[in-house]
Length: 236
Image (cartoon, rainbow, N blue to C red; front, side):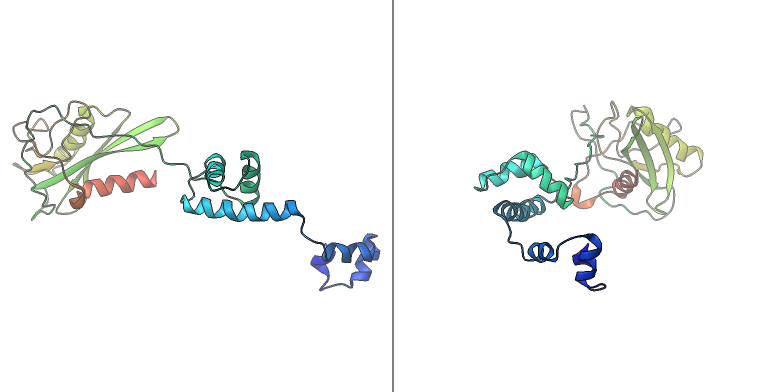
């Protein structure tokens, strides 16, 4: 306190007020760093560097192991104490949930979209995807249908499962709302949720026509529905 306020008040006055000998205060200001303090300071720098190298994902145990491998002897308890003092907390990786499983069809069906995610008019070409949202009550799955002409979500459905009905209900919502033309094409990743193996197909009055399926997309041509699903998951 005396050192913090020495610019505002005389040191002699504050020492007298706080009953601290001036000799003790000057001895404190001219103190020499102890070996323990020097080691903790050095270790704090090494911990910070290792933490940043791991992209803030390493906890005290992993950092302790890395430092010991590098020849810097330390214990988990000491590293944990210094990490708390430095305010370093490892970032926990986000829980992963797989939403698309390979289909059981012997041959991949043709891709009617042909990686061309555009449309001349609304209701002609649509894409869909499933994403997962983590809630306090467990996983919630969201299926969306996106019109490639307007980029609008024209159908969606949520459920606590990934059965076929999740996707077909989302598509049926778009059909019931009049957003799907006759002979329209609906495209999604080839896979099952479970049992669904309908990817580029012509929706019929029941929802989907199994006569035409599609092939799996590739990362460099990421479908717009994948981007929409990723944004929804990030916002959850």
